[in-house]
Image 1 (cartoon, helix red, strand yellow):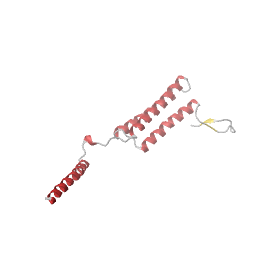
Image 2 (spheres, one colour):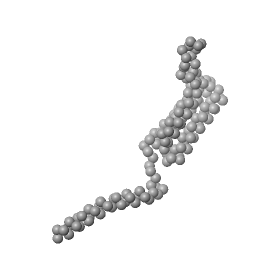
Image 3 (spheres, helix red, strand yellow):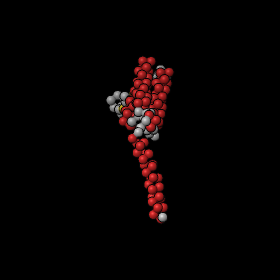
Image 4 (cartoon, one colour):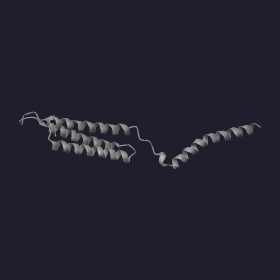
Length: 141
């Protein structure tokens, strides 16, 4: 009788151990539309950071234009470049379940920084280069 109870206990233990493993195995081989991997934790901060950076550059363009520090043509060109970067970020995020891979994120930030540096140079508030020995300091950009 004792061996019968041990056999039942062993069988029950085997079933309890095997059931979750079988379910995990089946789930791994059957991926449906609803089983898509959730976005990584960095997805939202990257997208939000790009949006906020682009909004900051746009506001700088508007402020510079209102202060007559840049011409309408320069403002339009800088706004167009900023919009292209924003659209590229949205397209990448949409094609990758809301994620922007690191390399593309760095490239988009670099491009946005280039627009910002161009705005600073056009308004005369960029980083100055030179020590004045050649006649003055010049905006970097």
